[in-house]
Image (cartoon, rainbow, N blue to C red; front, top):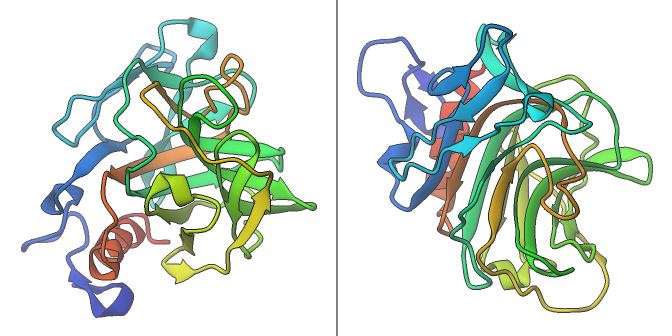
Length: 256
């Protein structure tokens, strides 16, 4: 038995007994884990990453030069999907979030190089404020967690993220229209101190495309140079108790 954040008890993966999985909490929108649902070729290039939420929101890539790479034994013996920071991404021509959406986002990921923007997940249609991006960005020479609406505008965290080290990133925004004033961030379950940045303007988030490993605007661009082992996203403002349940599951699974 693993005693997680705030005393939440869960079983480690592979052990007997009841154990938490993300579908135990309602309003699960997307769930991608590299240990399940990967379609790849003989060179481990990923063409599809299946959504485990039950919503069939699978992300795909048909162009060989834009495919990320499935790589084994990345974190705690488990695989991850590796993006090259140049043009790798997976996408879905559908989305669910709007300005009024409450979003709680989790990812187990690593950043390999300190690029200006490393995007884990984004939703984008067009226009400077019609975007939702969950990123780790170079802020004054230090990598920080960050939300962005492509103005740029959002909030960033306080902890410098080490390179090439998998971490559990948590972002909670309720609702998205208040992303520059009501973003909450946690790193490995520990709360960050958030700072607002960017210009004026109210987000106008509407239905668009979904991208894993890239930001949608312009191509897409601002791609991730690093790896993603798991992404879990809820269309809800999760309570602190439920947030801790998801974090405890991820931290135990990947021994973070």
